[in-house]
Image: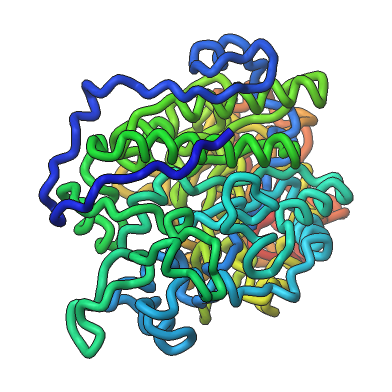
Length: 557
């Protein structure tokens, strides 16, 4: 079904070609058959036919982000594959030390040598379940373009090269054995411009001007370990002729300017087709509970932002096929598609990366996502259960869900800091889970210290020492309504024994609660709790012993 890799024109000088106008470019309609069913490959059809958010996501609330692949081998944090071709980056220095110079030993050799022999998805899934997680987000392919399953359309995959294992198959089996919902994530939409560093060369030193291995051809592999594997299927092609592509690739983040790769329309069509077929391959063979696409704009291949390069209907095509297959296999559509940062669209779930909205967000289902340390492993991360718990509370108080990445070591294991942290999170979740699972936001997300007119919140960003050291006071509360209709008040710290707490939002006026308080219980405490609803708030006296961690939770009826 995937056509041969198209012939491409001779390279032009770097920065010599202006991108085509993405606003006037007509959307490319891909000719890919999809599974039979009511969903057609348009946003309109998806919105019309999708039945709404599955109930299991509302129930689950907390998940673990399994953001793991061969880039962990660099022990340099996120985006190792791209950054090892930047001579002023730590990843480059680590690559020189651990593998060699990227003109001779590039990322393809990292793939060859990566073998996470300690990776045990069944054991890890049990650890995550014990930590309180009810779903896993499992990386299927990152920007490095290497598929972690027995991929039909990408020969550079974990069955052919590296561990020689179908890792998505193993994770899927482990999740089903533990009744854990799971989704597969796809980050290869912008691989074609993300990988442009691999076509460069050192700008100084004794290797100045020697091309990196992204410039190799299929013929160059004759007699080598990678014979028969086309480097273009991994690194793509050199697109630096377009003005701004090289500079963006060598920046810390920025995508190229918005526009169309007008000189490479045949390649663009091939690329978007392969992108879609790889996702459809996973849907057909692993039946995930959700799929996830990365990005910063309204969807893949929009012509701007992370979707720069081409406009195509690839995303609604994949989603229509997915929902039709779900209907065929399960008899109902209880799956969803995460289209990162997309506006409210029936059929999609949104994410909030790093930060959490200040206000309650109920216009669409959403998942707050952040890594502990970074999205891929590096030494010296800070491991702290409290920062994970605070992040989860902030998300659910605003009607969201939370998924946290605990970076796995290159060999597939978790270090002791991660394991201890997850155990502590699990203890807290088992005690306070009734306030989390199946909950929804109250009329307000919380109360406490006000800074510049806004409620002081847990900081955004990757979770690190500043989050572990962030201090809440006994006046800081967050709220949820449990599936039992009780109001839950999370005190964002553990007060000293005997402390008098005042929840100002539950005063005798009753404008938030709408009724007088009848009972107040401190979850995990069996004794009688002293409390009184006064004119300016609900006053609770903490017991003489407070053997709790991170946050105490009050159940109010």
